[in-house]
Amino acid sequence: KETLDKGLEKTKESFFGKLTRSLVGKSRVDEEVLDELEEILISSDVGVNTTLKIIDRINERVSRDKYVGTDELNKVLKEEIAALLSENDSNGPTEYHIPEHNGNPHVIMVVGVNGVGKTTSIGKLANQFKKAGKKVVLGAADTFRAAAVDQLIIWSERVGVPIVQQGMGADPASVAFDALSSAKAQGADVVIIDTAGRLHNKVNLMNELSKIKRVMEKVVPDAPHEILLVLDGSTGQNAFEQAKQFALATSLTGLIITKLDGTAKGGVVIGISDQMSIPVRFIGVGEGIEDLQVFHKEEFVASIFG
Ligand code: GDP
Image 1 (cartoon, rainbow, N blue to C red):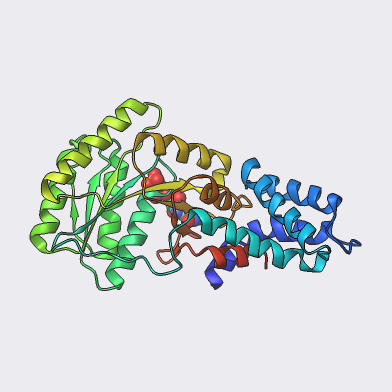
Image 2 (image 1 turned 45 degrees about the vertical axis):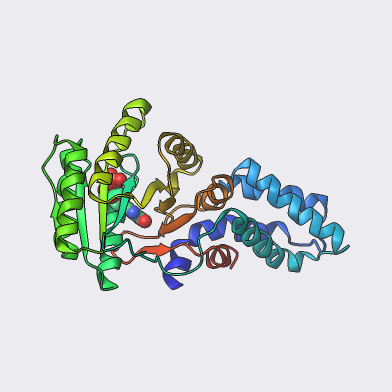
């Protein structure tokens, strides 16, 4: 909770801080207050559609309750945003649960463009699973960049989990096949496969990802069980665009939104969570190994609105 609050400080300032200042001298929520709220939400990267939905909900609340004082607005906002996120987001407020697959490892494939924090998030995830007593294997199938493989090797050493890699330029599907085979042979609980995400060529990306998936299925019948897209939250609406593009290229099951610390654009999490019917599973709130948290909508909203 403390890490979350600290990580979301800037977003909180852009929401709650601005809102508090704009409410000075006003006692009730009226047109003018709603207009200002709309501006604040849009400028915090919530996105136009989700902002309009939130304003509609507050408007309804105002007409239903006849009078909503500005002192209650914060509470009403928290309730309405959390309710809005719950409608599209089946992900509960629990720890990430690794399901059983008849003795097969749980296979998580991670996608995302360079620089979004993909490798770091994989390292943090591996660390969490390991600390929870799970046997983890990493697969370095982002073979397009030498740095990606090297960085994942460093993370595997840091966390103390085995990695399967064939160096840069290797066939990603072959690495994935090896990683799953090795994980299965070792009786691992979870395999995390790092893949490349070159969005500038969508057809290639689609083909590459579906080839990796086909090959994985040969080792573990229903793999991958999870396809997580990593997005850089500090890029605001860009992250949103990437989510849309990747959703067209493959069947995403969840999102990791990173770098929410040090940005005022954290509102993008609300927009993405509302607009995409893909649950936000984790958020990154710092560079440290512990700074990846399971996304909990009520806590998130509570952190932003103080
Ligand atoms: P990749 O190219 O997507 O694999 O990106 P990396 O994992 O190498 O991360 C790029 C940079 O972002 C690194 O300097 C990371 O330390 C940093 N980073 C990743 N996640 C977070 C986060 O949640 N908060 C902050 N502040 N930095 C992060």
